Image (cartoon, rainbow, N blue to C red; front, side, top):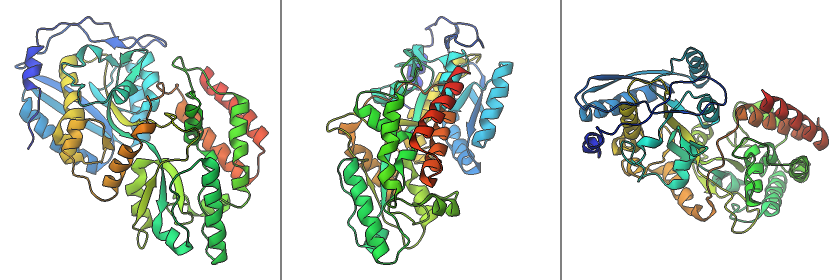
Amino acid sequence: MFTHRKKAAAGAVAGAAVLGLALSGCAGSAPAAAPTATYDPDEKVTLDFAFWGNDVRAELYNEVLDAFHEEYPNITVNTSFLGFPEYWEKRQTEAAGGGLPDVMQTDINYLRQYAENGLFLDLTPYLGSLIDTEPLPENVLQIGQLDGVTTGITISTNAWSMYQNNVLLEEVGVEPFEEGDWQDYNDWMADVTEAAQAKGLQVWGGGDYTGRIQSFEIQQRAKGKDLFTEEGEVNFTEDELREYWESGQELRDGTVTPQQRLEEVMPMSGFDAALQTSEMTWDSFGVSYLANLGEPYTELQITAPPVTEDGAKDLYKKAGMLLSASAGTEHPEAAAILIDFLVNDPVTGEVFGTNRGFPASETAMSGATLDGVNLQIAEYEESIADRLGDAPPVPVTGYGTIEDKFRQIGIELNFGTMTVDEAVDQFFTEMDVVLSQ
């Protein structure tokens, strides 16, 4: 069993007091700073910790928390978990009553909403002391910052990628796509579809990637523009979105998997169902793909998305999940220590592996044993280092709704039931509604 690095460090900062603010539930208020308090390693402390997941993840957390309690016998951690939708429903109820757990898993799409309402503790005073930042790359540490204030520490990351089914490509008789721009990729997909049809196979080169907001995002980032500003303002125009969706028209005219076929295999994707040889998604989807595909499709390739502009820093590390502390916790130092352990300690890599996503911390990763597709993902992320830029600003409140609307409109475009102009008008109208709430 690994031992933690900073038990001594905890005592070294025990006398450091920090300024605090009371919990504020008012919209637009700043995240609450740490209350004035000190950490006494002999004081008996109980923390509530909540996460989303299932019984498997709960058992893994129990094993990790046993190791934590060995290192910090004075801190007792009570856990609770729910499925993802139910988890956030309960957090919203608790937020309204001022009773969030001391420490909780956080999704990046909720971070701005909770932070701007003063519900999360400002972890900045603990960075570099109770929370070790050395194992976290700067572009990963920035993910949990809003207006320069850190309210979330990233546990795990993933990056936008393209998966290819090499076994299916062999059946079709086309070599995998290696690299090129978006037109190169479009041409390659057309070649696959044509070759499959010539062999009487119901297989297509890929799906309509213009239905995913992430592919639009990396094209915009290649031009130096995130989708939204730090202040949460829209940072792309109707003309830019129109050009993007129009670029997919040639794909929707016979190259990509027809929407009707995709509807038949839902909730799996065209890639899961071996209908198409490639698909762009977050790199962490590899294990799920292999589980759904089964025999004989056991060999996947992970490739970088097409290039928009040479040398652009269009890709980034996205938080798989983060950890935050409640602004109302009575034990902020103990909460910071727990966050540090769950993010950084090698035992978390040893026990969780990639269950929570790829460890963001170098020390946590050092404890993980990677093989198969997980090793491929690690090698992929190393291969795109030159394309990795800073994470975009914390998503606007309601981003999940905006992302899903983008996906729904993409389906209508692939069905052919909506024109690009209608799609742009509808998306901007509905996005304005979400952002004004």
